[in-house]
Image (cartoon, rainbow, N blue to C red; front, side):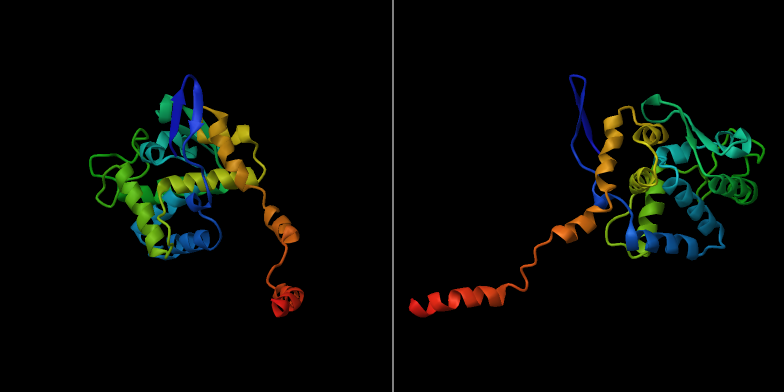
Amino acid sequence: MRWMRKRGKVKRRHNIGLSKILYGEDFEAFRDYVTADNADSLRGKRRKMICDLMINTGLRECEVCALRVMDTPIVLHKPAISVFVSKNDKDRDVAISKRLANTLVSYIKNIRPKTLPRHIRRQDINQPVFFSQQKRQYTTAGLYYLIRTAGEKAGIEKRVKPHMLRHTYATNALASGMTTRDVQSQLGHSDIRMTEIYTHMLNDNLLEKANKTDRDFSSRTSLFQRHTKGFMEFS
């Protein structure tokens, strides 16, 4: 998403449309691949945890890479994540479900130690949560590759990017009943107008209304022919 600031005004240059979120069969395919492909391997468990976290919190890829153990429920003792040095240097707390909190704590306790470089102690809570297959801290490029590859192998035609998971979270959050202010706080938007771009996709009953207002032209051919038959004969 690109924004332009001019004379204190925020102007959106690109809309957030259905092409930029995961929904329907695409979401199911993505989830099925992430949860099934090499699910018991270290790589599979790490990928599943990252995707689960991103699609249920709306964290930016840079925020996932910078996430430390001390910023998670295992130290905070509550179902939340603290985000520091985020975009525009705006720190925030992100509320998460108890299910996700328990899953993240389990990952940190049982899976993360196997991903740590030798020079990092398990007890060092100042260190990142996620390390790559090469036991290095994840970079945004590495995270982009992970998400894009998962989308391709899931058979999704559009390119799946990390920010698409953020858009998906925002849309789902608003659809589930969160207020725009709540979602703004969760995402860390500085301007509520940045959050409001998701609201246009929430009116699910528009499809039903579209069916009710539809005027079928497919069965009018014979009627048209009856009305025009005499005209054609006289010409």
